[in-house]
Amino acid sequence: LDSIRIQNDVLSSAKEEGLAEGEAKGLAEGKEQGLAEGKEQGKVEGLAEGKRLTAINMKERGISADIISACTGLTIEEIEEL
Image 1 (cartoon, helix red, strand yellow):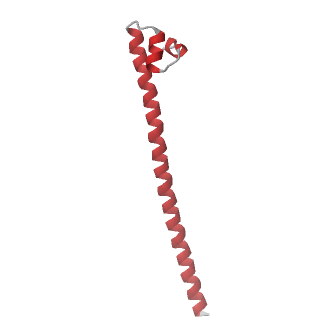
Image 2: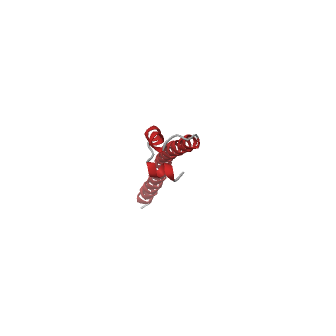
Image 3: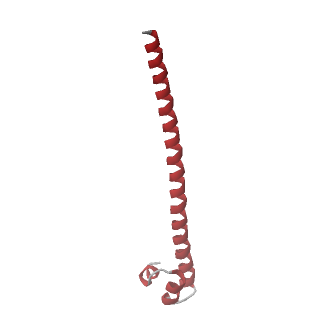
């Protein structure tokens, strides 16, 4: 009986250790993926804001919406809303 109890204790300990390692690995991978997605979203938002600010500056200088659109990729409607 003692040997069975010892075996169960060892298995239980190994199971707990394995679960802890798996949880730590999963959290690390999730954090890494979240950071990568956040960086990508930041790049997209930053590029969009840059285009918008460029369009505002061009519009303030009297450049036509057609040219602004060609330079920034914004639609005429988006430019008119600025």
